[in-house]
Length: 457
Image 1 (tube, rainbow, N blue to C red):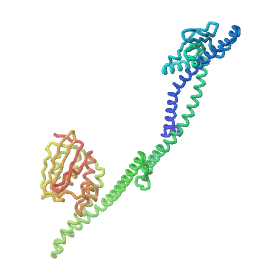
Image 2 (image 1 turned 90 degrees about the vertical axis):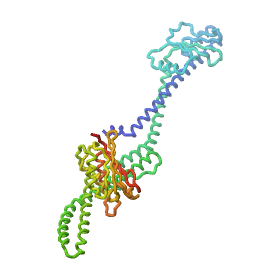
Image 3 (image 1 turned 120 degrees about the vertical axis):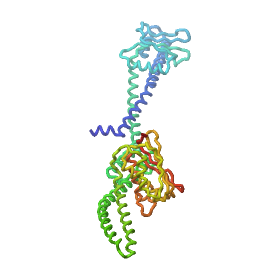
């Protein structure tokens, strides 16, 4: 099992691929090399045959010529030798009839591709063929030599040469593979392993800041990946810490919300009694006291709603946008005029109660910002509904736009919680849609809401 895992590792695969490609390159080199070796071997036989013919010319007598001829043919390993100068035959060695020729080759006409093919054919032969080889003599310009010889000795020499080439190829492959492996292991495999270990280690406990990967400072692609991973881990750690704090706040507020409501009920009873007091200062302070308590309970309720909005359970149903926006406009207050320009037949698939909270938050924000008119329009395109909500308020400040959808940071009022738009974004994401700020300035603020599923009935 451990051996199988080692073979599946990136290092082992790089090593195997390196050896494979080096051996492939050696094979591509071997093909023309063995062809050249064969041509050189045959050229040497022609040169030896030419020397043998010249040696026979110097023989003093015919008897000696016959004995010398036999020795010379044995030295050349040939059945017969012919030497031609111009158009005439000068010398011919071999008194007996040579065996039938199986293949004939002219070295002067040898081409690269045909030479490789002839070498391959020679290597795969299982019998000793008789070859007739002719070509220009390397010893004398204008002289041509023709030799009839066995192929067996040449094949043995070719196999011996191939063994040397194979051994050299194995050595070169091993050295090259080791060098490439060490280089790639140091430059790529080891840094990638560290990145993998860093991701695994951080994934085991993303809330532990000490597990955030520290970049090595490299300037290449791996260095960029390290910096991106480190930045992503830091952002995720911050988001998880923020979520954990929000969850703790939500749990705490959920527990004290019930107690605060009980306190409010008691305070309202007391305020009713205080309202009947003859002291005008007491009666004047009662509305302020009740309003402060109402705002405190409302803040607790919004925090609990936001904690629950991170993953709301949706009950999907067809929702008429025009009716939904009319209901949400009632929360804007009497001082704000609404212009609902959404077509009566545009419908989206969603949870009506959750979507009501989205538009109610937008209506309440516009009213609290001082807007006098708010308009809502919608259009259907390729199965998606795009809703635009615009007001004529004074616009958002730079700080509010920067932290617009962040809880407890995006409010424009001193006593605001900044939860309205954060809750709206969570609900829209749960529906597969989105909400974004289009523009905000002196002429007003414009939001756009995109719904994934919509139609017109």
